[in-house]
Length: 133
Ligand SMILES: [Zn+2]
Ligand SMILES: [Zn+2]
Image 1 (cartoon, rainbow, N blue to C red):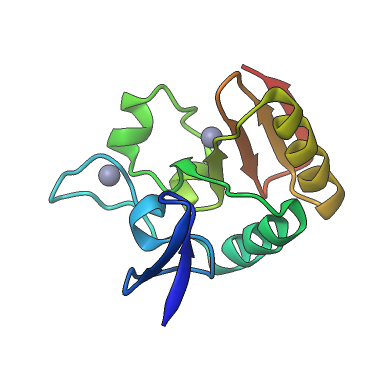
Image 2: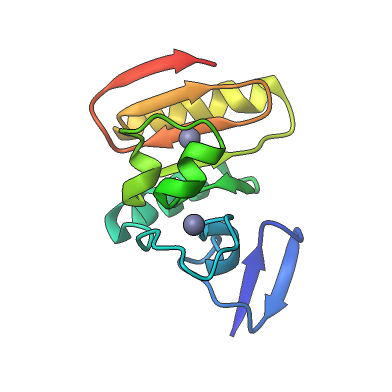
């Protein structure tokens, strides 16, 4: 089966995917430790993220998705971060204009947490709130 790979910007064969556009590889914890105990990405959250990808219509490369406690602390995440539950994703974009489009779509779709950084957009399914880094 062919899948669209947002990292490569092309259709590829064989890469394990969580959804049509999000691969297992890009969504796993980046700590690279054998003893990593990060939870899998939440299925409902990933389904919603995939719907967002369809509406946005552009690649949404993943900086950070699920995290173990070790990695969350290493990257300066909040101890209550939804990354720890596999219910948050940091997405890269090409321009600030794209970030705003993506943030608006995510908000309209009911994603709770929207965090804007210069190089990524944090999206989670927690309570409604927004911030800038
Ligand atoms: Zn980890
Ligand atoms: Zn985040």
